[in-house]
Amino acid sequence: AASHFTADPLVRATTAPLTLQVRGRAQGRENWDMCGDYVLAGTHFGRPAYQKPGTAMTIRFWPPRSRWLIDRNGFQASDACVAFTDSSDAEHPGNSSSLWYVFESSRGLHLSDPYVDIIVPACLGGGDADASSLEGFEQEAPLSSLYLTQQKLLMHEQQLREQEAAAKDASFTSLDGGIRFQRGMFGA
Image (cartoon, rainbow, N blue to C red; front, side):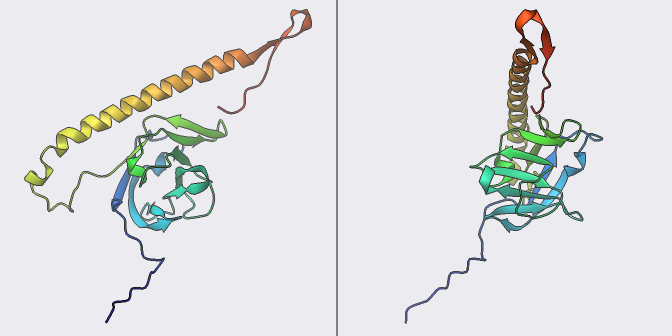
């Protein structure tokens, strides 16, 4: 007799980690409470989705913009978020090396924060792992993390230089008669 299998669209398999950690936003800065541990809560739009225990804060993928979002309002079909990173090819948000942009209400927009990143916690196997299974891991993780942080800082500095150059070009316009006025700058 032939075996029959039934496809179940609600069943998912993933290699995404069970926990992630958001870190790097300075305590006291707006939206710093997004930092902390998140646990895999299921999928959202076909990608792994995470929730910070005891809160509605989530990390989820938004397909229309190919972004990972951190949202304090849970799993919703919206691009509203406190932070995002552009990353269409990352299987989970801990795989992205892109800059994170965090909302700043004083400016009314998301600004890059090169210190924010998401990592997979170093605990492999729930604490029962022996030292031999971690051999080499402790040496590689800090170096790669440092390298990514340096790359983010370089990207951030380049972005600031470009914004400053654009602001200089756009901030003054010469009118007939040599009168100059400053135009307002909105957005980043």
